[in-house]
Image 1: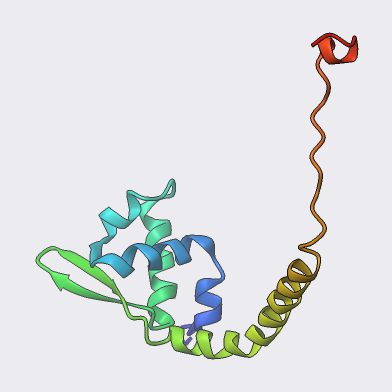
Image 2: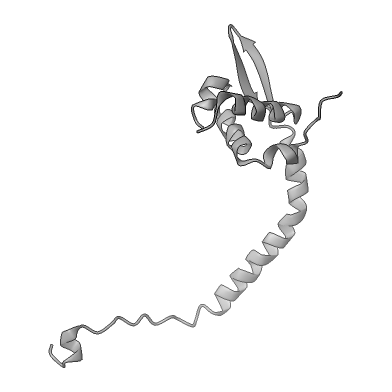
Length: 124
């Protein structure tokens, strides 16, 4: 039976794995240090690291008795390329919002402060 190879999209689908990637963006870490950031077991983190490794997003190297993991950001380019197509929709929405704000900027909202008891009774 062959091992299932995960792609970048599957790998980043899980919030824990996204956080692991964020942690590893700063420096290499052993699994014990990564695990300390999460309320889950070392075994669960090892499974997440395995998926990230299968997607070529992390790499581990032996350093003494430990294995240090580091981010390999190159596969994220595939994600960036895919998302870049959809930027046109975000940019269009932002342009529309900018246009609305600029054209309706002359219409100021008047904030009405509730009257105090003295003002309601006619006292100054």
